[in-house]
Length: 75
Image 1 (cartoon, rainbow, N blue to C red):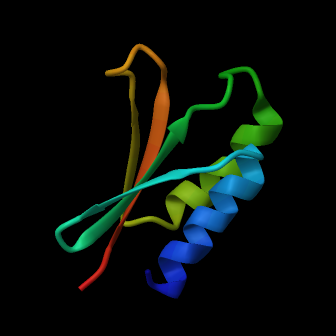
Image 2: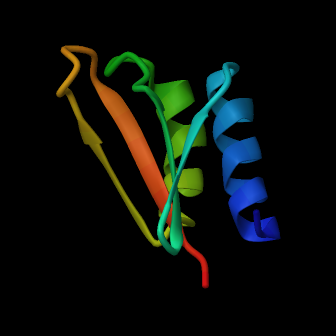
Image 3: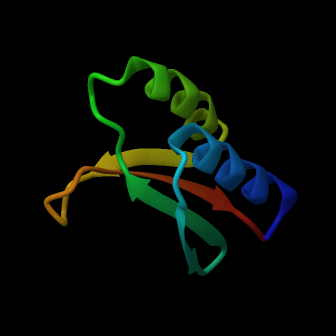
């Protein structure tokens, strides 16, 4: 894992105060975790700079639980 990816994971874990899951895909790393409460402005202010440092980021709710994800392209 690159320093950039490790820094992203650490920033998300620090902002959310919980572990962030990692999925290693071909040439990229995807971090994902439950999304903060939409009304929790303090947490979102901490999360957004971390997400913005990723190559791609977004959210989904395919598991009926809103999640945020971020990808770092390595190669």
